Image 1 (tube, one colour):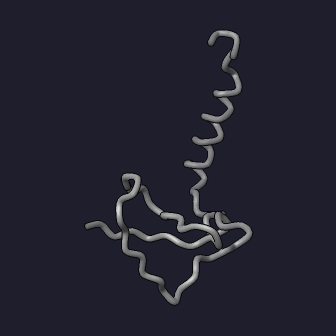
Image 2: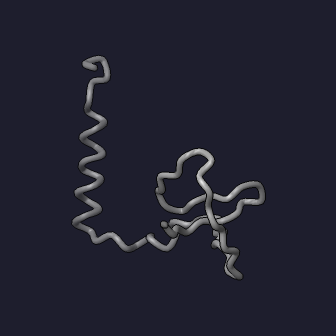
Amino acid sequence: MQALRGYFNGKEFIPMEKVNIKPNQKVIITILDEYVSTESKPFKKYIGKLDTASFQEITGALKETEKVDLNEW
């Protein structure tokens, strides 16, 4: 037996983590008195969390990808 977290979107139950469930496999669903956050910008909490060196490394890598010649593929 496995336990996983998920939510109901108004039509169906959506798992919040990867799980292998076979078609027609029985499940037990427990309804909690908690709700999933519906922030309009869910990634806002991560703004400002990256240090300067990491930011520069990532932006440098992104600039390198711009140099790729798509015709080579």
